[in-house]
Amino acid sequence: MLFLSIASFSNAMIGAVSQGVLWAVMALGVYITFKILDFPDMTVDGSFATGGCTCAILIATGWNPVPAMIISILAGSVAGLLTGLLTTKLKIPGILAGILMMLALYSINLHIMGGPNKPLSRTDMSSMNYVSKWLHLGDIFKDNATSISSLITGILFCAALISILYWFFGTEIGCAIRSTGDNPRMSRALGVNTDNMQILALMVSNGLVALSGALVMQQQRFGDVSMGIGTIVIGLASIIIGEVIFGKRIAFWYYLLSVVFGSVIYRLIIAIVLQLGMKTQDLKLLSAIVVAVALSVPVIKKNFSHKRKSSVETTKEGE
Image 1: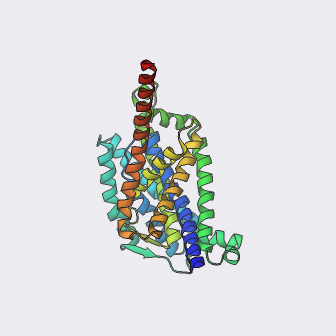
Image 2: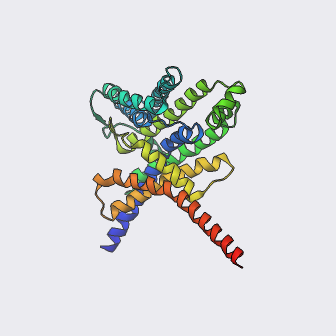
Image 3: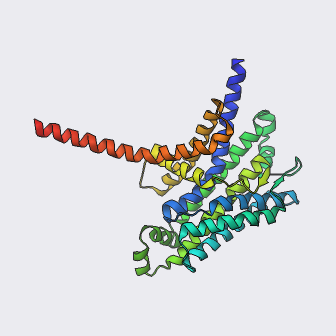
């Protein structure tokens, strides 16, 4: 009995890590808007589902997963483009533009799939199936082949994306996006078109979010119009947990890597709590609590260090 419980727990942890690396792709997209661009983009709740729904309907109609994911990325980028146009050209506040686009995408996703959800059949191929067959994971890991193939797929995508993003944000355009987020007035004074940089960053961000939706859909083998609900909270939790645990460094690649580890840790926390008997209906509440705690930790640490410093100074003055 104990062996079965240990095996069940280990399987749940492997599944959580595999989910974490797939959702980390979404967290990288959220990092671009919230941390680099300093833009509260709510579009991701809709673009995540757009990526999953688009990929689901294409694979179900016989498309190869690779071009299906490319189309999903383009669909997410278009959503980011529209959000950018709403906020830069029509001067709608960023958070409101994201909410409007998120609401519009719900109906668009319904039209894409022709219904609320689209399951994949067992004969439909996914990127995880290709990885599993390529590495013969079914023969090596009979019970966890699906989770292991998802884990390997997620690691490959995260490694490739971190490398690409590290290169891209070191280019002139990437630096212009970073300067737009840091100081838009100074950027405009230096000749940077901040409106175009905002639009480009939103397109890249939502393209990554849509890619994550496509990957998650392939793992769970069905697309659903509501699969993106709470995505923004999960992305923020991943970013904040990564910052709190791994701290801040100068290297940009370190920040990107901490986001990935933050996503994995978040999924592990969820999996452990579920193993302890928490009901799935309370997951959203738990997500909110995790984000609130992660946000409060830096403030608590700062206040604690300030009080400690004050007490030390008072002791020295007393001596």
